[in-house]
Length: 346
Image (cartoon, rainbow, N blue to C red; front, side, top):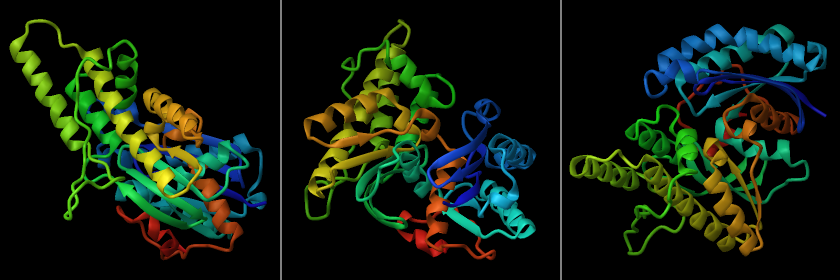
């Protein structure tokens, strides 16, 4: 049984958790959403400064919640890639300092691997192989999980990530930031068949379309054109709920169709969903219905584990540490690192 203190500062949440294998002993998340809402998105420099302000208090709260001493902690982990470089630096530097002061091994963690491990925290018997649909503000990927640190990317977005598209359409509809939760709320009172939006498709050089890659840029542009047309041609209020519902249904349909097809083609009978967009109600509904239809097991983590948190980082770090994987104190952060290159961190 391995116990890890983990830090997550890849974007705009300052998070600290203490995890024992798949058991969460404490989890503290300080969100910066109110701070960035006035800008309509995350401002990297503001995020970094806020991490500096909050990180020590979050560590103290996590230790108090867990009611354990440093003697019982086996390692210190931090997200080191991908993410905002300045924000990542705060978490990594703090983790390395704690590692040196308390003479504990340091474990650098890939942020996307953390989202994969969110499933393990809420489903104790879950194990590879399985397919992970990872949908967040910065990433949309289909990942074949073979073992700890062993991943194959089967599909990705060629432009906007799903969460990014939600945020941009949310701003377009004047729903504020973040756009995903706001669109989900309005979609509940809207008609998802009111407007027909296109599903993005990626053409192949030899003809046909890539079966598992995503594109949301065209969908976002279609919403923009519709809004401009309605505002020009009608004096009526913009049908925000109907647009939100139609947009959300299209995104969920695209994600569901390609995820189910990928799982069936690769003979994977279990699908885990991770990332902030995993909290979307329409995506959950469509995937669960399709999963039953095709006899596939679908697992969504609880909402608190969908958005960025340190518990998922700690779970990934605990698994790596239990296998003898530790990181050098010379390891640096990076804004981009493929999930298939995770083992470069150890």
